[in-house]
Amino acid sequence: MEKQPDIRELAARLKTLGVIMKISREMSDATDFTSAAAIAANSPEVLLHFCSAALVEYSDGKAQIVGQYGLFEPNPHSDYAIDLTRFSRELSFIECGKFKIFKTTEENEELSDGAKDALAALIGGDHELIALHLPHPGYVENPEFELFWLVEFSGVVPGYAVPTLNLLAGNVSNALYSHRCCRTSSAAHKLKKQVSKRKLSLIIAIIAVALMFIPVREQINAEFLLRAPEITGAYALFDGPVARIFKQDGDRVKKGDVIAEYDTSQLRFRLDSARNRLAEIQKEYDLENNAAFSDRNRLGKVPLLAARLDSVKVDVKEAMWYLAHSKIISPANGILALADGRAEMLKNRVLRTGDRIFDVYGGKGMYAEIRVNERDSSILLDKIEASCFLYTRPETEIKTKIIDIRQYPERTEQNVWCYKVLAELDSTMPLRYGMRGVAKIKGKRVALGYMLFKSAVLYLRWL
Image 1 (cartoon, helix red, strand yellow):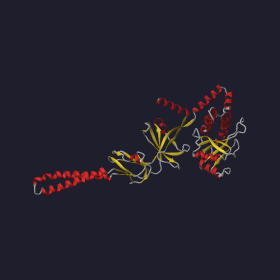
Image 2 (cartoon, rainbow, N blue to C red):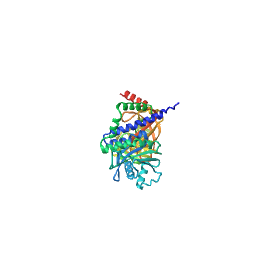
Image 3 (cartoon, rainbow, N blue to C red):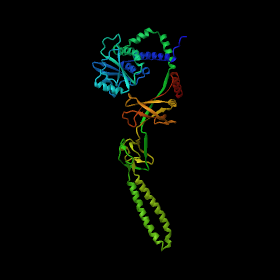
Image 4 (spheres, rainbow, N blue to C red):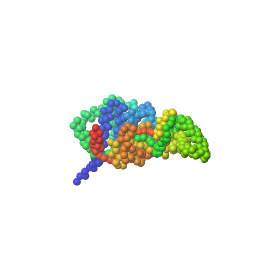
């Protein structure tokens, strides 16, 4: 009996074929060369599962990034782009249509010291990078430029990467050279002539049905904020204006440091008045108490004066307490974060009892507070993984470890109910409290059809 092909293998092949056709069609239909290069640098990620990719144009000893993973238009001023340009200037030794795998653990004798340093900055010690010299289409003779496709993988280059790149190289090269040299895509016109609309529709339908059963991981994007492990707040103990500020926002403070001071002029006047009244009543009390031994009619005034004396003593102690607490001190070690943002805004401000004056960010390290929208919270029911990308460094992925998931949603500043996910950061880059970015959260594997159906139901219910 003939052995039936494995359903998963058939689905994987159909998926690969469909993605290659989709990428080729999108690049051919792109409006310009920049759009086509952006598609070539981003779309193959579903097949190759790389961590970064770029297209580099080489001409007259100069290299220029024309497509970068994660960006529609490359940013030539980022650290990643500068290192990539330094490295790409020395790839001319790779023959057209050939490739080379670069590792920092090898000598790489073809590269100069500067290119080796740039390679080390790009891939570190555990990543590998494939540099593929895209072949020239047959209709392009002696082009004035060369195109290199650089693909970075986390760890060792997987076995399927090189064959898949070779399959994609022809279509990618044909579309890019067509946009740059001919302004039109000849490959797309040939495909339309060879394949009828009916056959093309049938192929698309078969691919669409097969894709519905392909297992994919649930994935959502959510904003995150870097916070300190320990946040200690300081609040106003009583009403009064602030006279002086001794620290600035962002200063590192120690427990017991004086941060600000109330205006004590009224408090001192209040204390002096209470002490004067205390001295007068004490004097009168002593006089009446001594006279009561000889004149029993004056004996009734003594208890009244004693009561007044006790009341004034309370006023004196109260005024002394206010003066003793007129200096606002830091409750912990850490970094100062003023509620108003600047010391100038806090000075001369009239505080009310319970007003938040400042926070002190302390503790070792920092964590990411990921805010998952309540509509996407079903992904939190199973084990999840999260990677963070800062707005300031969108090309760098920060690995995280989930440490806590809140069991109830909270309303954010944008009036959106979100579940807060706390994650430890595994990064050596310099970070600051308050940095923001986008977190990519991955859940369990589900069928693609189920995920699309679920998204459609949630959208319709939201309407």
